[in-house]
Image (cartoon, rainbow, N blue to C red):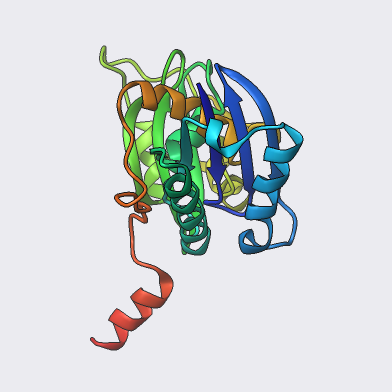
Length: 239
């Protein structure tokens, strides 16, 4: 099985190709240029250098949101166009679950936080010892409410979780609040794991593919979770 993974849900643009649980190639960029400038050239380059023909792909896995509205739209349009051209399915991967998959094998909770501004984050809570177990599904949330929720969380046997690992672009923004308010053992993911990676999207996407969790290119749409800033301003102007 061969899957192309794409993640443009945040500042990072990342593409990867996996084949039978092996990463054939991965290209990640987190420097200045916009996704509209980088994503298609990155895909073209990774296909050429890995000598992979588009027609050999079984599916396209895409970080389906939440995240940057512009980034999600660019990623969605790219994935839909590619999948439609080769008549293959799309595997939508929730952004927070894809981020959590970076920390596969981590003890305790894994908590991705993506900055949504005004003390809001897109977040979820997971255990990823063997697969991605959803403790709290991805949602927009106030960072302080999130930390308070984690502090009071217990497992199925009523025991506090042994700790939590935070990752995502919200960590440097809300790091002070995390350290000041968290009451259980806490870690911050290292640089190699703390941002979106298309290899995680593709690898986790393969699991979802085998579970039949795919959609056609026509049916795929990003999962924004809330309205864009422009839409919120427009709604406020009508009040």
